[in-house]
Each structure stands twice: as structure tokens, then as C-alpha cells.
Image (cartoon, rainbow, N blue to C red; front, side, top):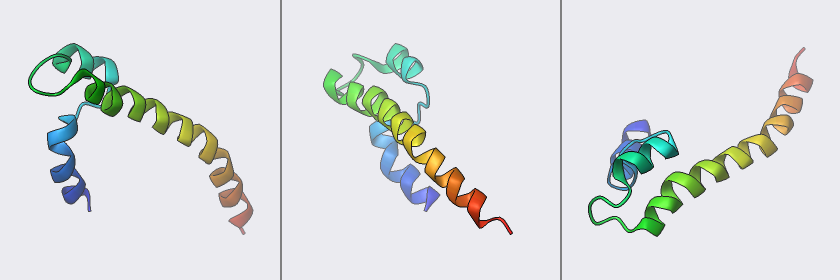
Length: 68
């Protein structure tokens, strides 16, 4: 699964993990429009953070109640 996701995402993300690093290195380069760059690197990262902050407490409660 990891190999598949890497193959599919390579053309869209370039594997940059930090939005600022991605913007400094690739914003305005090539044929990628600015709105697509912002969507992939900034909105995606911030959205993932919000989802993680919301979901993590529920997962932690579930895991804590499953302990014998």
C-alpha cells in the first residue's frame, strides 16, 4: 500500500513534508498553478492537523478503555 501511495502522490506533492519548505523550493516553478500548490501543501497539512487534533482524544479514550 505504501508503494502505491508513493507512486500516485509523486506527481502531486514531490514528497515535501513541511509546507514552508515546499513553498520556498517549488512555489511558482513548473506548470503547477499556485492554487493547486496551496491546496496540496498548506490546506492539506492544516486539514490533517485539525483532523488529528479532533480524532486523537477519541482514539486515546477507546484505547484506554480496551486495556485489561
